[in-house]
Amino acid sequence: MSDSFDVSGVLPDGMLDEVPAGTNLLILGPAMSGKQEIALELLATGYQYGDGILCITTESAQTVYEDIERHVDSLDRNRIGIVDTSGRDGTELLDATIESTASPGDLTGISIGMSKLFQHFESRGISDVRYGLISLSTLLQYLDSRKVFKFIHVYTKRIETTEGLGIYTLDGDSHDQQVVNTIRGQFDGVIELRETDDGTLEGRVRGFGRRPTSWTCEGREPIVAERVGRGGVWPAVLSWRTERARGGRGYCVGQYPSEHRERGYPAQYPRARRGLSRAVGFTRARCLGSVVFDLNLSLILSDTGT
Amino acid sequence: MTDDDRPVVLIAEDEPSIAEGYELWLAETYKTRVATNGREALDMVDDSVDVVLLDRMMPELSGTQVLEAMRARGDDCRVAMVTAVEPDFDIVEMGFDAYITKPPDRKELLDTIAQLVDRAEVGEAFQEYHSLMARKGTLQTQKTEAELADNDAYQALLDRIEAKRAEVDDDLGEMEAEVDFVSAVRGIEADDEDEFDEDDFDLDDLDDDSDDGGFEDDGVGGDDQ
Image 1 (cartoon, rainbow over the protein chains, first blue to last red):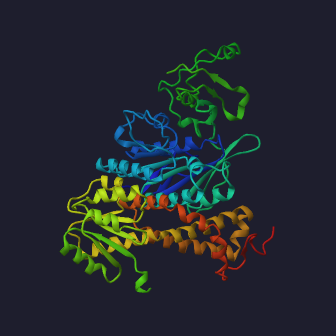
Image 2: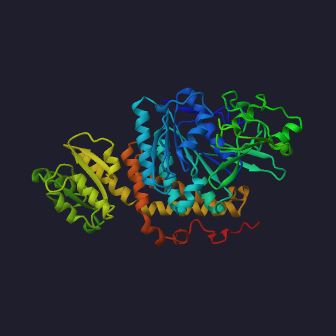
Image 3: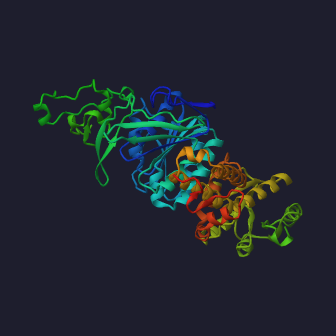
């Protein structure tokens, strides 16, 4: 078992490169600030070192699986486990170990699923486990905030004791500020995200017994995508650092719609814009890719269903 | 603590000599009751019982059947299974809070029961811990970090939070074993009824600790912005 987790490369260099085993880290930011993408990158970063990924999701396992798959070269079913709390059927994924609960409010079910997957990892000699809980905001919609608070306490303590790494996301604007403050106090560190008045996305790291880092948008070239899912089209920011995005994996297959081609864009989406290739990873998505600093240049990719 | 306050342990064990052995060990710290088969055990479980020591193999109803029936009718007292075979993960899923391998040694038995009693009683400390953290959260919305850093009352609150957290963690016990983790989470889910009664807890708690001073509804006193 390692005594630390390498998380370098997700945030700008020096901001957060390594955390001790047993760390619980919250990613806090408004909607569309890229919380989930950062969480997934933090989970996936350890995959190359042989870490296990154990993700509790309030979406379907399929969605999380696809999201994680974008960040790793090939998924080994023995090293990824998902607790699907969406209550939906159809979790027959071949490459991940899935446990299901009827709803995000079934805390005992979540803890049982998590324990089972932990044992599954343990029996295969995987001792370094990165846990995702995405998202706390959904738990707060289902349960009294005191109950969520207590659950987080027990859950973080479990991760601390078993020397894992816990990653959590919380939408700070969707809940009472006092509730958000109460909950954020339970973590060793917080990655805070915000959007400035001119639309720039910034982040900083607080906690870990250190002074907060300063707000920065360094390396932040988010890709904005429209994701077609439940409840219509909703936006998602897909990347903190485009240079980390993995291109050339068959996702980059979109074509510009004709009106863009008329404006001089090539027929095929350029591989060089690697960050955008990731956006196309949403097989069900229509992607509206753009660099946030240049929103007027939105490039629309049509989904080819690949 | 008077004798009447002692936690109640129900021993469900069909072999009288073994049940007597447990009683001897437990008598110093707990009030004990003995059921000699599963059906009797089920009849004897009520709100006054804190922990059930449940033998897995019993006539009439087995230990697992008793637990199933208990959980089905909403009894959430803590249950330790005593089993001759090393249990598999089913034990956790079934709703046992601990297991003890037969034959237990004295220390193992006493430690397990003590941990379950503590965990059953964590509710109040947990509630207090949440209230203190919520108070901290409120102050953070009202005051700047610099103001809070200079405020003695706030610093005293942080100390109390640390102390209360240690108490909660001690009551919950280790989280290393899956059965303990799941048991602790089940306890949170079962804690519904207490939640409403303790709504006003935070103010009472701060009032009875005048050393802290300064905390009222409007936050840290004397530090107006």
